[in-house]
Image (tube, rainbow, N blue to C red; front, side, top):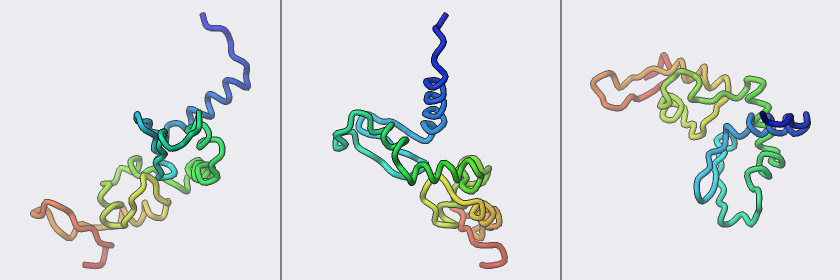
Length: 126
């Protein structure tokens, strides 16, 4: 049986785990999908660059709050084709605004089923 951890330690672990879902770590650095940025371990000179980013980045904190409020949405969770966001709306990141989800849902494929790649335009336009 593991010993009980102090409440403060548990809360810090839970906070880190909640935010860490946005971080992808490689051998040479890490990506934060929430911020849409990449950092190199080789150039950072920091012992804990991921923790520093999660704890000190104002952009990360602001975007995390927007996700929690539902104003910023992970594109993969929308149930819509990613191309609607990439090709149709020009969004390159992993997140978008709630209004952009609605706009992506209204896009129509004008290329038709015979074309290998859809061409998305706003409904009512060609």
